[in-house]
Length: 108
Length: 119
Image (cartoon, rainbow over all chains, first blue to last red; front, side, top):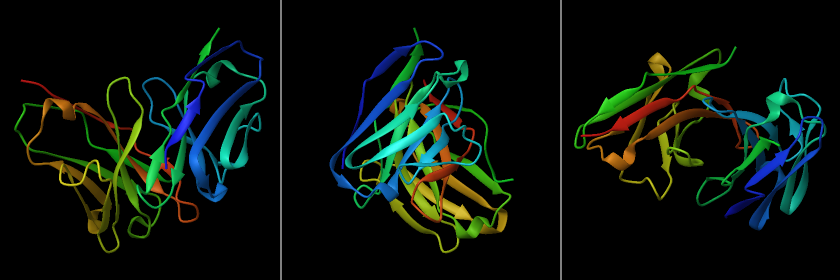
């Protein structure tokens, strides 16, 4: 399974809404779709698992949705600390774990 | 508090061997899979392999099979990633990550170990 994220780069201003896409090459179980955030110079951090469940401590401006082959991460109102790279991740069969190539969310 | 603490940055020459580590704390280390993830400079995340410290069951990504060795010592709550002969192309940041019990996602990440291979 290949995960394709779009856009590659998203330029928005604080306060705006961000919508990031993750498309799978074949249908996947939403139970096994996660999103991670990586800020410059930092390790990734789990944001969303099971396609729509926020991880502990993640603000409710972050939400995940989707099923089958199309999944989305939405940030309702961007805060300055949200500008980062976002990766979707799938747990499957072969390979066991797959990441999308990432979407860079940058300040406009 | 769950923590994964990785060993420090390394600078090595091509052909040298290396073993980096990831120590878990704040949870039952033996009972959670630990994965290794590569991030080459300016690039995305790549899953390398995963180990279950309880019985050392290990799975590798086809891309990394035979290139690295993953091991664990549950007595010291530590997982390892090692190379027998480094190449310049092994220069990257390496992260360990704990796999959740429920859905296969990685719920906690180590801080990363930067490996630089240069003559």
